[in-house]
Image (cartoon, rainbow, N blue to C red; front, side, top):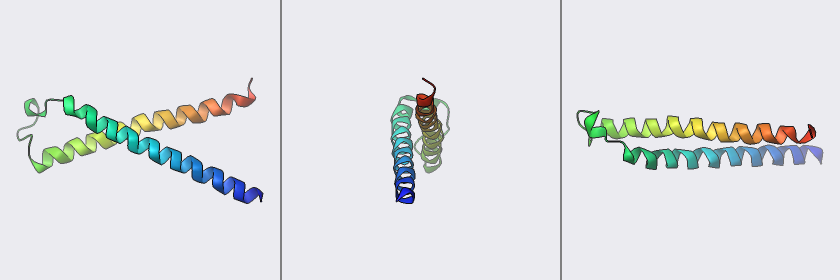
Length: 82
């Protein structure tokens, strides 16, 4: 019975982290719309420029998502402190 609770708790935590990461990647993708890539990249409409934008969105979104999941984890660990 206890193993089921632990497995379910891990699954919920993993699903929460996954959804958080995906949401943050989408938000980063939307935020990157404001960057004028035509001033930075030679061909801003090319496949390579789109791939760069996707990779930037993944990197930024992952880091922001990791911050939020770590923050939630750390704050839940403080329950026993008070």
